Image 1 (cartoon, rainbow, N blue to C red):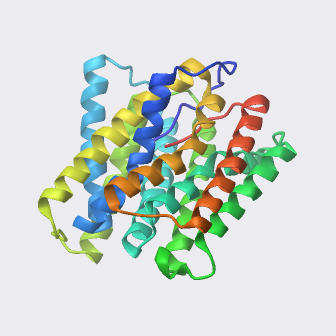
Image 2: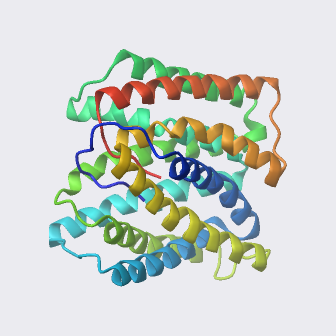
Length: 307
């Protein structure tokens, strides 16, 4: 789900309660995701997550009387961006989860997305890019590499790492693609359409490759899918929209560097993941890099972000 592709208000101080809630909600997705794929196969998990999120989103939009004003062209663009940001991005990350990519490492990958988006905007749209942003992104990547180490077996192997990296790239491309949509469609209807178009291909791939009932733990699978749809997809969208409205998309993006440490704590509490001294050093390096880069981005350019 994504913020509207509109100009952002001047950066302001973010309201701390929604900001803290968003960081926890965003980070918890890296806990619920691995838990879900341990209970059921990844494509089926995602397909049903987006079915449920689309139904809830549509009911909420109708209840609130949100206007559905989209041309056929805008509708097509919203759907296309949704396929990239939801089907591709989450599809690759959830397969990486299934292969063994951990929650903390996954959140570190995605924490790089706002800075990577700024770099892609500079390359594709010739927007201004500061050296602090470039240095921050490089520093963040170095931190991730420090955490990964030379032996990738503990994080699912080279394929899991490659899928995690590609997931970040598709997230940034989808975020950048929000500008291509145009017309400023209603955020809730836009997200609902993006959920809806992502479900069928994921379910089809899941049914072909995983079977019609690839569930190992029905209770855990149901709880995980409900949590991902209601908390991550819907509540996360509402919180992000509020933060963008109050502080601008650049200010909201500055919260992303907090996700890895929060995820690390949640992963330790819920999944039993632990970090050694090297992983802690790498985590700190990534936080410093992303934090510096997003702070610089907040001062220089305001652009949409995604969760």
